[in-house]
Length: 433
Image (cartoon, rainbow, N blue to C red; front, side):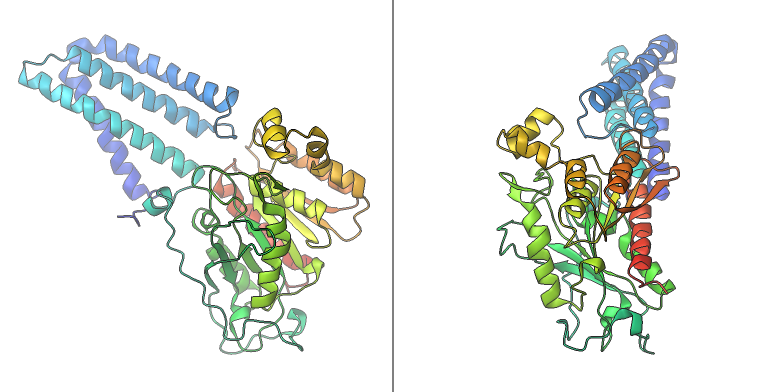
């Protein structure tokens, strides 16, 4: 049951059909009372539009603007609930036919809510299966290569040639990366090893540290499950003779509802975890390059903001950063709340942590590069791309911009742009041949 695919048309289309048939059944059995149904449909649609505007645009409950799919389906759900309410009110309790109407009306409500929720989920691509929606992950523990630690004389990727027994696919799995220095209580990370990392005499490979966003269900597994990153990385490796970066997907949150903002502060020492504990584990366990030019920090949404922050603050750790749909700086939604909870009320510390200010203060960046992307239809985060790009270029960073066609603030955009960012990084590190 937990493996049931929630994005499949084979599930959604029958559900939509049943929902419509139940709604039509309510209307048909009370067909002499069609005017109240018409009023309910219109009123419900207007109520849905109002709710989308209030919670999505005014109160900004989820931190992202609703898409047109979100708005339309909210209206549809409210309209169908309106039909159900009319059915319950107009149906009596004595006649057998009217009892059927009441049953259908009661059933219509959860069907409408479920249809709308799954349609919105399909648009965002957040929960591919029931297990994902329940917060369960079926990522197996990572089996490290037999000789995981780098040795003296490790082959540089530029001089490596694929052996005859090169695996067709890479390997991924979960690992525990302890917060020995930061004392950050991170959830298990996910690591992807390309085919080139799985053979004897594996080359020394560049590393991408890739972060998911923050919000309901947020976890490193989102990157491979909603973003389909393993399949994307396998395709990249197949085009380059088994070569691709090692991709480490750590937890920068501790919990989906927490947001330490990739800083060291009262909400957790996330920055130290990502810049010290994670690299230490990678160097000790994998054939990874130690040069800053061969390390990139990448992320989507809140993870994209983190990539901007850490790329600007730690150029000696991350020579490249990939910012997909990030914000201009660390935030908990409201500036006052951000300063109070994240910076103990210290506005000066808050302002000093803004990455655009860091870029200006630490310029020039002589060896840094950035890939900055967003969805072309993302009205909230898309306009941030040119602002960040201009500030980075002014500081000396080599910038590549990308707008993903037909993309919003969703995992379609994230998966596409993060994969393109990996290939961009491969060209930068001469891994792409």
